[in-house]
Image (cartoon, rainbow, N blue to C red; front, side):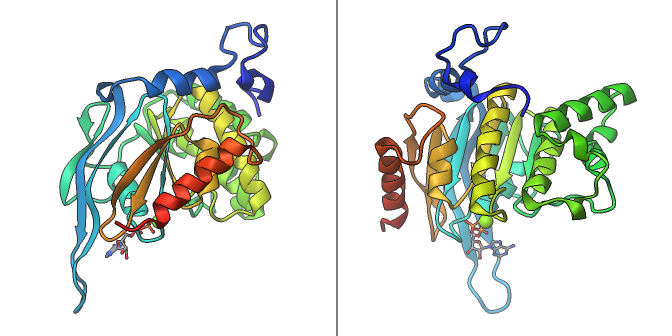
Length: 289
Ligand code: ADP
Ligand code: MG
């Protein structure tokens, strides 16, 4: 994948990049962790969501008083058991579902509707089957007021970024799950959003592809400097990716704890520190109040 290579990310080769960006990966994690919430790219302030009862059931308190922030350029994962409100939170942040209480701020502005300041990636690929890879990636751009030449250039850049340049004329049905999700990521990034918001984006691909996509996403993150809020129920995935992990609990959906992942990237699943974080987060998820 273009942009950042594995060696550059470790930051121990000072001559790796002529623009001096070698080691962005580790540096970004350290500096952002120390930023005050005021610099938050995303801030959730007492967010609650109650779904009205349908039929004779009770209303569901899907989220209760959820507050946390994601700093500019930070990679935050949201983990928790099935039904703890992760997708609800994702939809509220995306402006797709209205919160019952509290609010979400994106760069200080309240989110009340979907905005092109966020690139959104769903678990299901949500690609347009009648459009080619190139047309899918350019979909949001076409609807912006950018000149056509700029849109074309941007689509080319995004296809290179996710390694799909040679598949530009293919239709989604001929692509593997991993490739489809690369298209979805390229499409989300094409409009140059401030925030990349993802809900279990790698849930539908096999384990090997999943680990490859995780590495690629970290490369994209390091080379673009985007803020990422990534929802998953896979604890090892969260420990692989995140600067910080927001651990949720269910009934009502709420934040149990926020865990700083203080391990250099790239992280190795076999390392003792990695296993320790996985154990700790699993324990938090399994813990009862
Ligand atoms: P997760 O993504 O963590 O599995 P969800 O956000 O999908 O959790 O769901 C949280 C809770 O809200 C669950 O109890 C679920 O049944 C309920 N829920 C989700 N969406 C709706 C909806 N549209 N209407 C009513 N209840 C819902
Ligand atoms: Mg979900």
